Length: 194
Picture 1 (tube, rainbow, N blue to C red):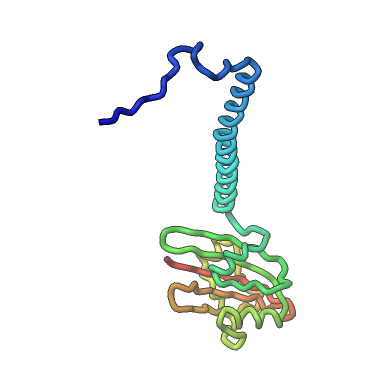
Picture 2 (tube, rainbow, N blue to C red):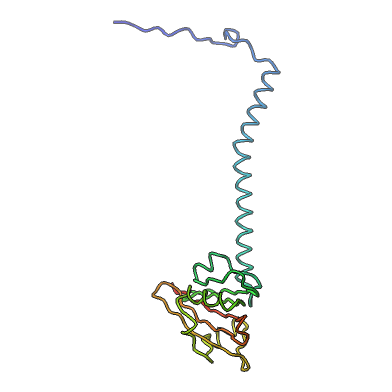
């Protein structure tokens, strides 16, 4: 039988072959440890704070937008135009929009002024044409007109159409003021249902 021998272990500080740590080395080691701890905790914590602030700001922007009432005098985002399938023509002026959303449906209300040629392009892109328009008809309901603040009174040359698509695509109620044929004013309510 063989027995293994364990090397002798130092029993006290005096027997340790390493020299004692001097004060300068100990301070340097403690500073290095403190820096590593700050970096390991501080950097992720900083990212967490920045991310939380960005998330909160984004939520506040969305809250402001959703609590707005009436039309906003600006273009809807490209994403909204894509979702609601409202291809506002390039060069359109007096663009304004308003969005509503609830558990049953979402609606995007848009108005803009365009040229006669760009009106034809717009109607083609939504799946219609000028020949499909019904003269003297306002396709937008009174309820939707009230929500957007639109007033379709007499004394204008109104034309309207409802463009329907298979679900889940949105459908559009379109009313156009053709009083000035060179610069028609377009009103659209696009509705999506989940």
